[in-house]
Image (cartoon, rainbow, N blue to C red):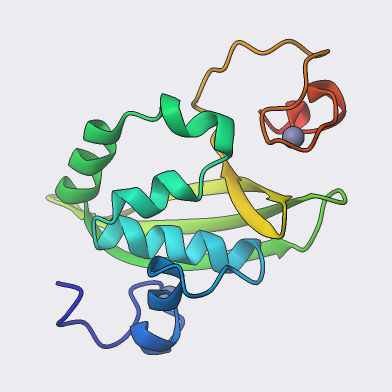
Amino acid sequence: MSSSIVYCPCQSKKRYADCCLPLHLGQETAVNAEALMRSRYTAYVLQKIDYIVQTTALAQQDLLDLSEMLTWSKETHWDGLDVIKQQAKTTKRHAQVEFKAFYQTTQGRAYHHELSTFVYIDDRWYFLDPTVDLAITMKQPCLCGSGQKFKHCCAVYL
Ligand code: ZN
Ligand code: ZN
């Protein structure tokens, strides 16, 4: 599929080669949280699960259910993305993006409406997955790798 598409599935109106492809190939990193979110949506459309994993907060990566992600990615009839709002930075290292990801069902078009949180570590954005339970305490170092205590860092977003 990736070889046949021209315009990027994230609906940036740009060509895939000029949009999410360089991110998927590791040639570029996302310039902001919205760009990362778009590239993750496109990765789901194209079933690039490795990319989804690599762009999730480091300590959460091993806990992701890859087969479930692949199944979800394959069985969903993705049908577009609408970025509603990007809050550039909610803290020094966090940003949130509100979006709708559309898909087709037998009853018609439906969507996931989400407010996703991203964390910026060592010059890269990562997705903070609120569904991954790390069993971390408030006083422990944060799962994102910032070196701060969890309660002062990502805890409010999870
Ligand atoms: Zn794109
Ligand atoms: Zn953190």
